[in-house]
Length: 160
Image 1: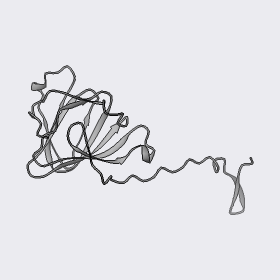
Image 2 (image 1 turned 180 degrees about the horizontal axis):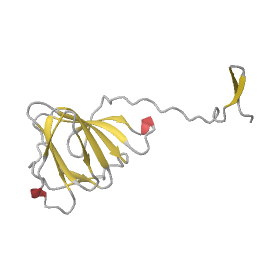
Image 3 (image 1 turned 90 degrees about the horizontal axis):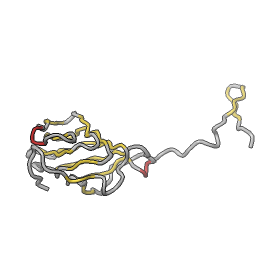
Image 4 (image 1 turned 120 degrees about the horizontal axis):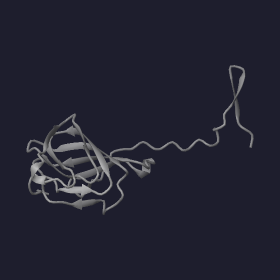
């Protein structure tokens, strides 16, 4: 097949990718349906396989006012959280560390943090309103056995 040409201001240009341009991925939209996360928060997918993401995914997580999540750790997934709404606390504990010695950090709108793979974590929303954040996951969520339950840290027992 001949390489397509086009004319621009009287000059001839060859476009070698005119017939091999990949399909543009669709725009992600916040899912109407919420799914429960292994930690008990509510998840709404923004970008995943449907939008042709192959190395990461993006969702919105919400924890209701005054709620404390279930403590979990991920086998291989790393997450980056960006807080959109609310105040709360996040407890993150490295592997092989005494969980009782690790204090939670306060979070609020505009903060960001990393949940490294293999670290236990738990979070709590203030009683004043929900804690809502974007959650960037890499690699994309691999399936139901990714999250493992762990013992509660300094945030105590889950309420959900």
